[in-house]
Length: 211
Image 1 (tube, rainbow, N blue to C red):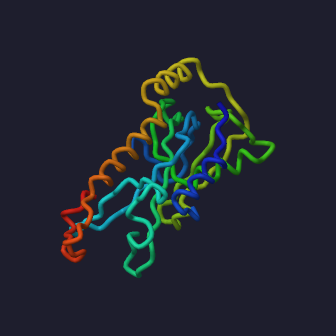
Image 2: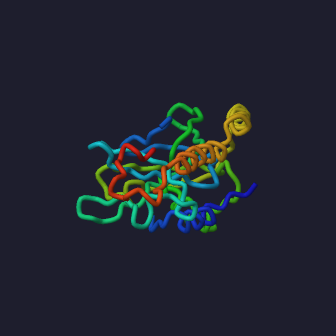
Image 3: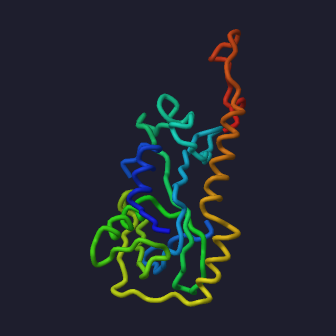
């Protein structure tokens, strides 16, 4: 089945108002092959609670996420903090040629979308037909932390890798992983206590909110 990153990004932009693990990118260069990707992203808000930062899965503004609009978290300057958006992917890590699951930054997916539109690098299906080098700079601005460089030539994946990927997709679907995370967040949202006519909004305490 064709995987169009641009189309997927477009849906993410609508749902999460974007401008922009098991495997972590190391500082500098990492060579990988993108094998599979969730069609929908997963977004995380970072909420201050009890003096600590707590990650909360976003269910999307259209689904009633309370951390959008007037409830959006802000930084110390009062600026709204948009959720961190990532896609869940299976990657072939060329350091040891093993398949790993990774939460891949939105900026990387935008780069993959750009490659799909270039004649020399175009591809429709996953796995990708060539490797990419992802250069990570933790000191760079958020939108510039990751740079993607495609390999100069395509290469065929081994039968063993394809068989392992097939098994992973069957038993641990990335779309199911994302759906379960969002489902759990939606269930928690539904359990949030609402105000009765006799309650004063000022009486609600942070510990009463299940996020």
